[in-house]
Length: 273
Length: 126
Image 1 (cartoon, rainbow over the protein chains, first blue to last red):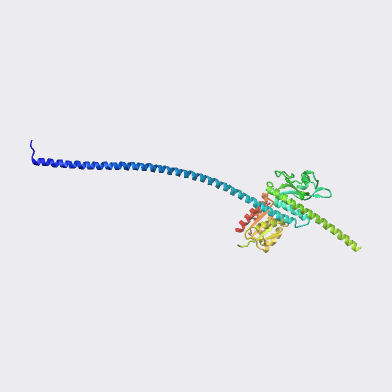
Image 2 (spheres, rainbow over the protein chains, first blue to last red):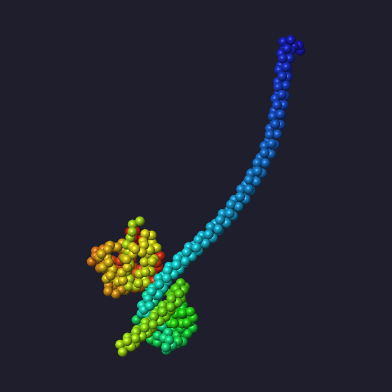
């Protein structure tokens, strides 16, 4: 079979086209391979970056967890400290109230003792002691016994409460009854409860240094006063010292005054004769 | 600050002095602002010649007791001055009578001085 030159040329032309196409295909394939290589490299790079980022993230998370734990611990510590300080604060507030109460009581005692020592009249002194026991301590029934130096007995000098005269003797020997025992020992007695009518709920000696000059016995507190507090005990003991001084001073003054008047009478008689 | 005048009525001089000393710890009250009366009759006389911002009175007193004093201040003097009763008498009948007669407050002896100052400040601020 013979071919025409035009056909032969056409075949050539087509083969060139094909060759060109193949060459372009090759170039494109090479380009694809190169791109693939680049992308693979990029993938490896990105995976490495991802791994590094994950590592970093893990470390960050760990760090944050540690910081959170630390913050929690610090919060717990601060919370504990806050509660401690709050407790301390309450304690200080309580102590402030107590000190304030003590201050008030000492101020009361100051005024009371000032009034006790402002008179030399034995009856006024007794009246003052009665006022103090009633208004400052809250005693409703009580008795004041003063030691009679001549007989060595305790003599009822002042009292408050209607039942007292019925229940208690005007005089009692030192060592007899609770009041006498307090006078003998010189030690104060405080009952645990307020007791029933007639029972002693507090009895304390009136002492000048170590010498007992009398006793005060409290038989009943005011209805709204449940019991004597620690502060009341302290106040009563302080009051006892002041009351003893005031009673002895007023007695001495009264004796001196009587003697003076007697001597003045004698002198006047002598002058007249 | 406006000066306030107070009347303290009690037959116990010691207790009157105590109240005066405690009240002077309040802001704006000095010893000179406090007048003392030894019983209800004395208090009534003093109230007729001077107006007070507050009266503190005991119950058991000679001549005129605290409950009668409150009653007469309200009825005879027609005064609305705040009155605080301070007494050892804590029985309900006394408290009721005091409040019925026109007292503003009834406090019991032995008194807590901080509580007294609280009551007095409240009444003076009214």
